[in-house]
Amino acid sequence: MRRTVIRNAMIVSMDAKIGDFHDADLLIDGEKIAEVRPNIGPVDAQEIDGRGMIVIPGFIDTHRHTWQCMLRNAAADWTLAQYFGGVRGVMGELYTPDDMYLANYVGALEALDAGITTLYDWSHNNNTPDHADMAVKGLRDAGLRAVYGYGNANREWFPVSDLPSNFDDVARVRRTHFNGDDGLMTMAFAARGPQFATLDVTEDDFRKARELGLRITLHAGDGLWGLNHPVDQLHSRGLLRDDTTYVHCCTLSDSEFKLIADTGGTASLSAEVELNMGHGNPATLGLLKHGCRPSISIDVCCSVGGDMFAQMRILMAGTRGFLNEEALARHALVDPLPITTRDILDFATVQGARACGLEGRTGSLTPGKQADIVMLDTYALNMFPINNPIGAVVEDAHVGNIDTVFVAGRIMKRHGKLVHADVRGLRGRMERSADALFERAGVPRDGTWLPKPYVRGTDAE
Image (cartoon, rainbow, N blue to C red):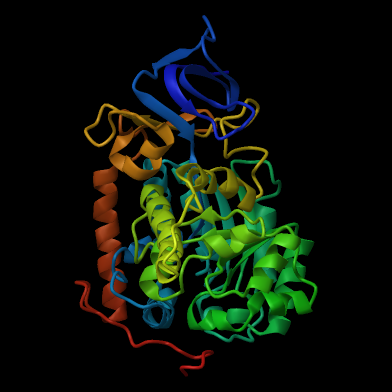
């Protein structure tokens, strides 16, 4: 069994019982963290010099439509309604199973390169069984920890849909690819919910997913579609449980935040997409008011970049900015700030693990947990002097500072490079596939395409 020891590093464990260290060692034994403390002493293990490194838990992205990275930056200037018009109305149905594989493989590698060791793949373009199989294969081949969220076919996502979910295929994927729940990859169900499907269909989805032992996630409270009190609707059918993650939450009411908290639900916030595309302001403070600590996610990678550093900063600035604006209007001071950089790093790690149902395996540098670890090189002009290691991670660091990434004790990135990916070859494959996809769609691939907004299911219809 392989063993690795990281020596003399600054360690941010995100476990209050372990604490943080200015100079300490971390021992990896096989897939798991064995020890975290100063001066572990001689061990029979591969040695990694951690001097000048900040060691943190791997980031956890709790909601990414990874298949859309084939459309990367095509939606950079789109609203949410244009996204529905372009991605759902045009592109989704044109994806081949090979497109699903390549997009998921490249998107998962992008996540790994950015220090995201766990990815919740919100896969909602499963037009055929082959599409689902190839999406799973793309994640598995990339080698990261992943939750595959099975999320219906493209045609079933036009709001407000009364089309039933294909649970024969959900059960097949569960049986074929995820017979257990203890592997590097696990399965969940990405439901449309009452914003995008009827309440009867939603209830059927929730009950059947739970019969298969699948955690559930859904979009709730985003944009014009999120104004219909989706959490209240779920509550009316007795569907709220602690196995559910609510994505966005921007337009939920205070009573809905309380319902989520009281039933043990978790939340995933995608502040950059929310602010850019018109979902609403980040729901951070509304959730925290009732004791629900959110996680962080990237969301539509056809619109925004795929790294956690940007998402942490935007969520923090958006949350603080909202409160500061209110205080200015009252001629008041904000003291102290409502969230700290440690809070934000907690959202990106510990709370991400909770939202994925993986808090016993990952999210902190706790002995006994899986060794999902990121090492950040501070010998860079944007990083030193290190006056506050957590502040450096959240406010200063970027993907270029990531030296090493471990997933379950296996080195996936070393000295700033992925160790098992032909990135140049992948670019050629992606360019050819994107050319073919846009040609099938009959739309330009130069940023000038602005789809017609899709507003069915809203008051703007």
